[in-house]
Amino acid sequence: MQKAFSIPFLTLALLLVPFSADSQQPADASQATAVPPAILSPELDKAEAAMSQADWKSAEPILDTFLAVHPQDPRALFDAGYLADAENRATDAEALYRRCLAVDSSTFQAQISLGLLLARQNKADLAIPELRKATQLDPGPSGPTAKAKAFRALAHLEADMPIVEGKTGFSPASADLIEAIKLSPETPADTLLAAQLADRVGDQTTAETAWRRALKANPDSQEALAALCHSLISQKKYDEAAALLKPALEKSPDSPALTAQLAAILVAQDSADAVPLLQSFHQKHPSERAITRMLAQVLADAGEYADSDLLYVQLLADEPNDAALLTGHGHNLIRRQHPVEALAAFQKATEIDPTNGEAWNGVAFASFQTHQPNITIHALTVRSKYLSENPTIDFLWATAYDTLHQKKEAASYYHRFLETANGKFPDQEWQARQRLALLEKTP
Image (cartoon, rainbow, N blue to C red):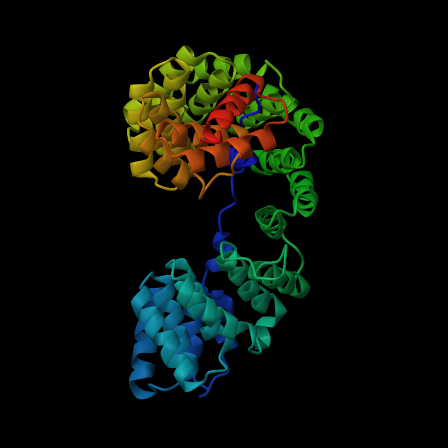
């Protein structure tokens, strides 16, 4: 059986841990008094006492009255911002935090709360600089734990940012996570994020270590198990991954992620057991589309083109504009000797996703089979932007140019083909030599 699956397919099983809700919450109510009081005030003491009990209705009129008289008091401005934040009045909270910082830019609690508020609104571009400022301030009575919270929030926000050029295996998020752990003990969420960051930069050794720690801390976590297996499979440690997956599947036989991973291992090991594993799951859960897609591909690789195509057709009924499905369908049509229908499927796939090299590959072969060498040349030209050349492609270039009577180009590609074929394609090599003898024959 041909090994068709690449590791990116396993993202089905790598269930990413969401941004911890705690890391985005406003400063604790008990820390509202962390802002040094500009004015000693029993009114603010009373408002903060109410806020510490989440009694917003009692605190709000006190703060409004105080701010009417003292509109530049940073303590009152922060308290009012925190109250608005807690009541989900984001616009008011942001304005009050900014007013507080305009009066006193060293107010740590207002700075971190502003950053966290923006983060919760999915405004990463605005939140990051505000949180960065917080990490540079003295947290005062809040202590290192509060500053660590700013670093953790930054790490989560930056997790999807581009890797720093010239620093392989390093991202801005990694640096911030390290700073957070320096300031406070590592949390399970830290371990998960560290593993995800390592996986993202391709450092599977570090990712494996972190996922093992996460799984040890929570043995029932399917997310950690799936991610650890993803890392092991990426390193081709198939037996280790299978040893983890098989007992897990006995406990959770309906898990599509674990099923997909075990199937991927079986495919990588050329085991025919991948087909019955996926078929069994598909029969029980026919609506699980990710497994259906995987089964369609495995059946095609096993030469079961008709059965595979039935699944592709079913999937396309619900997702007619899925370029990957159209490409898989097109390949089956080619193998079943339906080049006209295949060409239509491939061309539709390239219209939907012009960067799909496999679809352009299909256009090239299907168009040649339907005697349209000009389309073949165009498809091969585009394909070369996304996929590497190989002897089969060199031979297709040569025969397409030969059909168009472009002798110079055809001869060049026949020579390229013969240089790379190395006896693996005896029939085509014989044909190439025969054609070269005619193309290069001296008049």
